[in-house]
Image 1 (cartoon, rainbow, N blue to C red):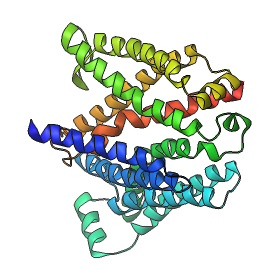
Image 2: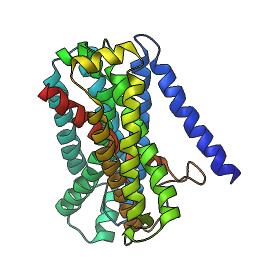
Image 3: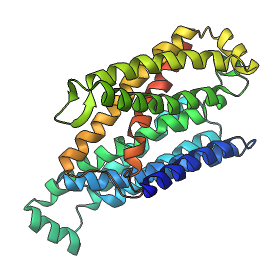
Length: 317
């Protein structure tokens, strides 16, 4: 119990510290980007171990290198102030390059690969293809999903009219929403699930999640996000920005409800992967809590949804 509490305090301190560093003028976003990049690498390596547990061939080295290049490409785009579409082009090139590099690297006749071909009874080409495809899974989940957090962190540097309405604080609003939604949703789902019990949500994937817990999580997250809208309105910069872009309370309520659904989906996907790999946790770095993926699975899906949701609002605007 003490280790679990201590682990929780360490995680909370790390998150608060990362957000505190983001407050530093000019360089704060770089520190936060670095924090996200490190998490992407650690989560990707945990995913590599899960793939091993599912007997899916993959390259741990490639899986560790991909988020590093992904992060470098992200930083390159904003450091040199390239047009927005170049961000997508660079990330697509990195993904394709790493897939092909993984494939080609497994065509060589090293001692390790020769032994691996004998053990798997696969030809040189089939082993290379299977390893590249297995690695691609980890490239996309969880590594590429971190790009949603990275783009949210840099959204204030985009040259769009709606960004200017928030005077450089839109990133804060979106980051807070992306981080807080899974916290509310997971907490309410756990407490209400324990209290009301009832029908299991997905017993083959997770024995503890209930339909009642999931439903109350969506409802309460929507209500709390609606209240958060008024809290943001206390600050003039957010009030002016939301008024200028026609963001109202019902936008936040919908964000909370749908964000809760996506957060729970991320949690279920991670539970499914762990069940397939026959492990309780994705890692052991946090005693009583598991690994990085165990703590960030729902946040990754929340970040992706939050980014897309606000983009849709601004497109309509």
